[in-house]
Length: 285
Ligand SMILES: [Fe+2]
Ligand SMILES: [Fe+2]
Image 1 (tube, rainbow, N blue to C red):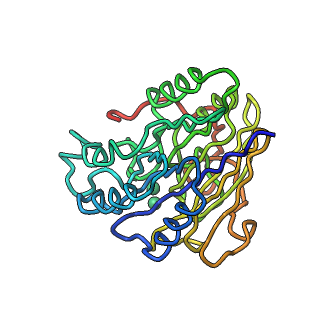
Image 2: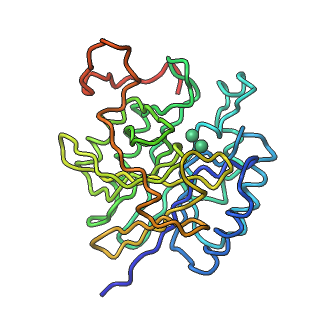
């Protein structure tokens, strides 16, 4: 039988407000367990400050395994709006050279799908948005994989609401899930909500699994700092949530799934079918 593949799924480290004790523990776990890859699903920093990216680079550089990092809403300039509009990813590029955009393993690939945008036509820019370009790039990357290869899609925002305290409200998330369901996608890996989950979403094209990792920062919501340990044996993908306190996986995972990913409605307002959410890009993305 082929050897199984071990992956670590980390998220929301938020350097600047990171949990140092948890990070030391994760670094030791990576050194001892030697996962084939580490996927970090965004919010690497607290406010995209240069010193926060420098600390992130130091930590990643010390990991002697392939790492991929998806951009989170906290990884773009927060205070400097001019820079946010003109060069939103310049600070994030500090990690270039240390990480890979896509990680290709035998029979398995980690493919990115960007959900954080520099601006969007609603007040809260921290929420998710899958642009046409981002989805096209992701689908093209999956379609270019060697035959028989399975994909893990790395995003920052969950593509639909997952019952956590934190929300993603990802525009075009349902559309993206529906497209991913037509492809050999093992799961969508996400962060942002700071609590782990493992759910299956049904779409018009079939089911898609969504796996969320908790946070390794001090910005806790419902669960202590944690990361996900993923094991792929060629047939099944097992998820174990690891926390310093060794809270059992089922007790860590949020599993209450609400009906849709739309913003909360006013009382009496009719429910809009999710397929009416237009696939539009924000003015700039
Ligand atoms: Fe976060
Ligand atoms: Fe986030």
